[in-house]
Length: 133
Image 1: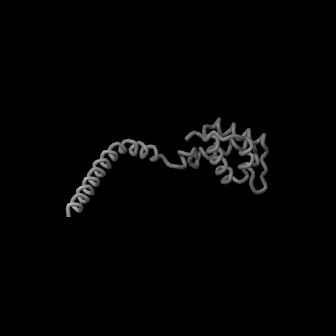
Image 2: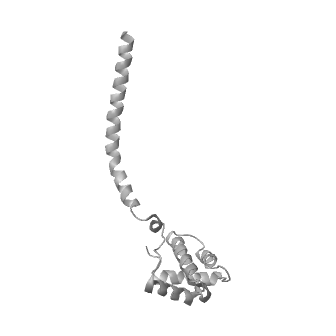
Image 3: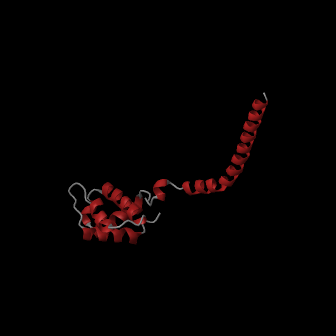
């Protein structure tokens, strides 16, 4: 009988200590969780460097800049806008071989973009400020 009481007392003490220590650590963890929530409140796509889809005059300005850099790329305007947004994600993310990837992203259907045109497209995206998020 004494053994049961001792075992029960040990179990209760262990649970009490665990409860106390878990409350203390949750208070310590509250600040990092709050900071993490603030950082995550930004749209994940925007956090990854993807600019919002341009509309109106901004869309036309972007298409004009792309056409100046590589005229055929705007033959399919929606594809050009998508390619520009994706290329911005690479630029904003510090990717390597940006000229090559631009030439790949802006090649679709019957439009072929060279690496030299890819470089010009990157410069256009940067100079227009479109890639800033």
